[in-house]
Every structure is written in structure tokens, then in C-alpha cells.
Picture 1 (cartoon, one colour):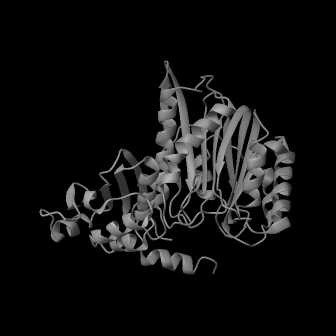
Picture 2 (cartoon, one colour):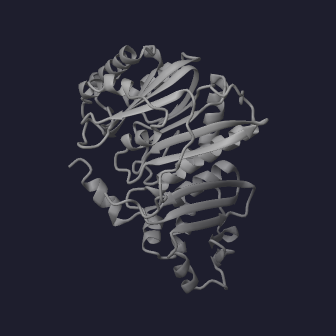
Length: 404
């Protein structure tokens, strides 16, 4: 598959996180001649937090992770991820697959079964051939490496065209704390928690309760503000693991939270940049709304509009479609107070096209890869930023052939 034109030049060089190791294998769950299983092992003392899809048809893996996170504090942990099959909508077989995989990981690694977290991504409604995964576990355990995170990022891909990683190092007091993350996601992206699969690791010391609070809060302004196609996955999983290896407590540290936010936003933006068939990265800034919730509703209405997205794909500055999307959102709006800009170009104001606007200026702006749509409602202080991509023929081609 051709790499997205919006992809970064290379996978970033990420700092090694003390207390976590990785290994990958070719299990042949769906794909051949590529790694499709990842196992990460986390040292004793690790705290784990997570947020998950709110889909009513979420997978057995998601339900199992949610149950385990509700009953744990800190200790050794393992994360097993397979790609090609989502293990969703598979009834009792799905539950069996999760239990057998977790049991086998516990046997191979010595990690307690209640601390084994699994995820699967891919086609919905087909039984997961978990025996193929279990057959790789001894090798995965033996090949663990602290430098294996890039391979892990590649192993969890499905329709992704590039592996996604991000990392920062922050200074707390006079000591460094490292934060790195990997993600997969390209289609079925309209998170109602996080997005597809995301795993973030840090050597910070943090209690599970604080870690969960920070993750949940930062998710709302990062992963919950992206959309590719308005569809929420059955398997969306975001997990944050703090090994504590640095010995630096970050429970309420502003520098740590800023660094974590940077990694989460970076990964969220990479998912949008790898949107199936995408050629444009679109930032939608909504200001002047009645409240923040209304601003987000309007931003998502614009971002999820097929008419807006196809106009962007065609480099057509059809601002009337943005007016339409604001109006249909259900949020409070006043036509005569609405202002629309493409970047710095004033397009419409006071209920009509701006006297200074020219179609040529709008069309030229739309040729860029990075598009900013700025909408001000003029009625309050509410604001939100949403990130999306355009909708092209490529999206249809990928999804029309997804199971073939």
C-alpha cells in the first residue's frame, strides 16, 4: 500500500523506557510475511491506566481490559496485541480467545493472568485463530528487547501506511522523565474514548488513580478530537503504563502532564495524517460558541460532513458547506454573527460573503496539504479544536476491498 502523502519522513528515534521490553512475531492471523503480533512486558511496580471505546458492541478484549483495570493497582504487566482480526462480535469464541491468550502469556512470562492485557484489531465477526498466537509466545518471551518499540508499532498496523510513534523527555527538578507512545489507526476513526490502539509508556512513578485521571482528561482534547470517517471502532483501546523506574513521582507535575499531552497529540495527529486515502490534514478551530461542548459539536459536524470533506479533497473552497455543517449541528448559532476564515483569509461574516474575499484566494489556499478552517460563532466564550482529513476516492477503494 502506498504511504500516505501526509506521513512523517521517518519513524522517530524514541528514548528507551526502563522497565518495558518488546518483541514481535509473524503468527499469520490474517497477513502473511509480516509481523502481526506484539508482546510488551512491564516490570514490577508498573501502574496501568486505560480508556476504551464506548461502543455497545465492543470486543471481548476491551471488556476484559476494562474489568482488569477496575481491580488492580500496580505490579508486573503484559500487553499482547494482534492485528488482522478484531475478535469482535464473535460471541463465546471471543471470550475464549481472550482467556486462552491471557492464560498462555501468564504461563510463558510469569506475569499474573489478571495483569495480562490483550487487544486485537482488524476484521469484525470472524473467530480469532488464537492458537496461532499462542504458538509464538515462547519465542516472543525469549526475544524481548527494550529497543523493540518500532517493530511493535509496525506489528499492530492494519490498513495503516506507516508506523506511528512519538516521544519526549521532560525535566522534573533536575532529573529526566521519558514518555513514548505508539499507535495504529487509519480508518474507522471517530473516537468515543481514544482511537483504535494506542500504547504509551513512561519511566515516571505515578499511582494508578492519578495516572487514570490524567489520561482520561487529556484524552478529551486529543484523541477524542480527531475523526477520519465518523465511525467509532469496536476495539478502541488507549493504555498508559508508568514503570516507575526513574523513581520520580509525577502525580501532579505540570511538566509531566505537558509532555504526556505532547505525545498524545502527536500520535492523534499521525492517525489523521494516515486517514485512509487522505491527501489533506485539516484543523478546525471553533471559537465564540455558547460553551465548549457546543464548540466541539460544531467542529465535529464540520469535520464529519462528507460534503465538506469532499470539497477539501477537490480543492474547492465551498464555504457554504461549512455554513451548512454549523447549522445542522444542533448547537446554538446565529447566522448573522458567524465568521469563517480559511487560514487568515476572511471568507464570510455578518451573514454573507466578506467583501474582501475572492474565489481565487480561497482556491489557492485549498491547494495546501495543511488546511485551517476557523469558525467564530460570535455568541460566547466556548472553543474547541478538531482535526480531520479529506475524503477521497482512495477511502472508497480501501474500504470496498477491505475483506477481500
